[in-house]
Amino acid sequence: MIECAANGWILHSKGGGKYVYTDAQVENYFLNHHFEEIEPYLISDSEMFHGCVTKNVVGVASETFQYKEPEKFTIFFMLGQKTNFL
Image (tube, rainbow, N blue to C red):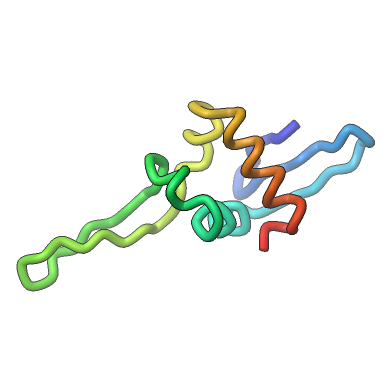
């Protein structure tokens, strides 16, 4: 079971173990390895620069992602957990 915590995520394994990951670990993994799939859940900031608008990604709405697409979120999360979110 994957549980959302205040500043991260907790994975409860079937054997009774707990693994704790920070939001930054999970979000960085999603951005680096599954960018296209999570694009609808990106949090961005727009800036004007000489008449052009630039978008800067500032995070991932991972709770929304988990709520709307729980199967996809679980698969991506478990893939990240296998590599310790590197």
